[in-house]
Length: 102
Image 1: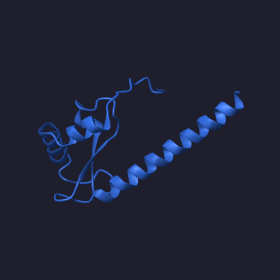
Image 2: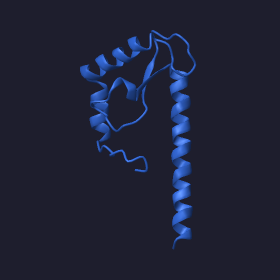
Image 3: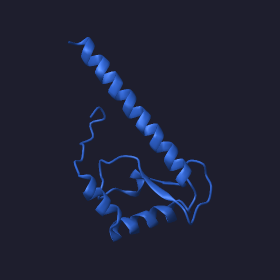
Image 4: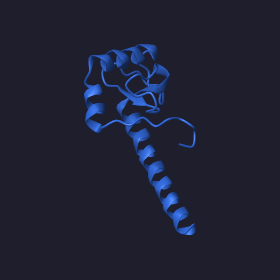
């Protein structure tokens, strides 16, 4: 990867199992209390409905709280859409770049 971070390989089923684990539930609550249940993007208070976003998956399964973001559901959806758009743009750029180099 360009930022010299080692890519962690894991399966979707491993990730889903982790998100259901007690370890993740404790980490999720720790991040919520750290942020005082305030969305890091729009600054709204959200004690009942909140989501935790991974900024990176480099340390997935043993991520520090600094790798996570406390978000309201709407802000999490917005970030995920942005991430998908960026991924598509990178893919288009790679395809164009590979055609130019061949």
